[in-house]
Image (cartoon, rainbow, N blue to C red; front, side, top):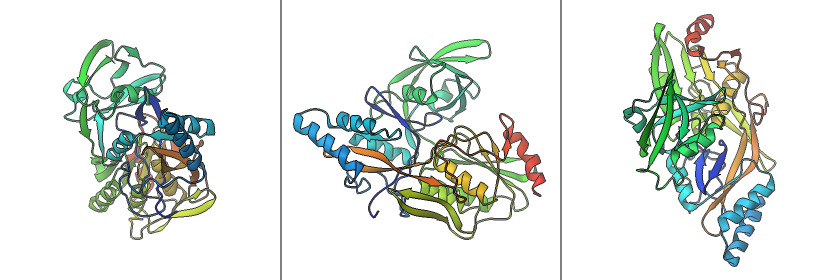
Length: 387
């Protein structure tokens, strides 16, 4: 497996040939790149050694792309058809520019308007707005409902499609373009025209609750986020509990999720995964805080690497998991270069929690079911754990 990079990320959809990385919001979804099986976190830039020379199923897709080049047709489209025929629901093909955009996402940079959303009862609800972003400047706030994007209704549509609309059809060139949003707040309806911008987002934020409780919110496992979690835990009051908020976290670099696990575990198994039948394991580093009470908050937007972390903390009895069932994305992808420089990402295996549970298609069931008031309940839960 030397030289190969594996991915474990939420699904992508294509609209008009553009890359639309799925996230429960406008931030592009993270990928697990350069983290399996090795410890590095190098960017998956087009042409880099992160995209391995094609073998196995990757070779089949590469052959389709090569045949298309020889025939004077689009190698990317040919590769996409080959991936679709394979039945790999998580498989995708990146153009070189799209792959570079993907690399930027791993560093926490994205193009959009600065709002995050989720689907609720068939409607799209804004869950957060980044400070200093176009959405914030327009007065949009959490709790508002998004009714349309550029005149197209979003009611009943997957949040993934809405993300694609918000980002624009060309992620490399959409910064500076405008998008018109139809919004609703209570009985008020109005529209706002926003200009997309190149933005960055803090992947880890730290807040406090009464009683000294520390809330560590991880929006995505981008580069450096694991160390940020460990730093937050070290600085948290020693006599109070910790809340690890993974709601809406669509995944990211698995190496960063493992580093985050190391903040709460004294070494040991975090997850196992298989790659084309070959078994591997991920282990936490020793020295984590195993004493302070810990609650992990999850929901249907908790995916991939965030589920891997949740499963490890739950299986090893380190955290009480509170919220709703997670998304259920436990496939591992590996990228391979195509003859024209594009990259095909194919599913090559699946990961399991320390107890051997499969996550893909199943998700993780919380220890305690809770919806809107989950964060308000953690004080009682931590008190019961002896905080």
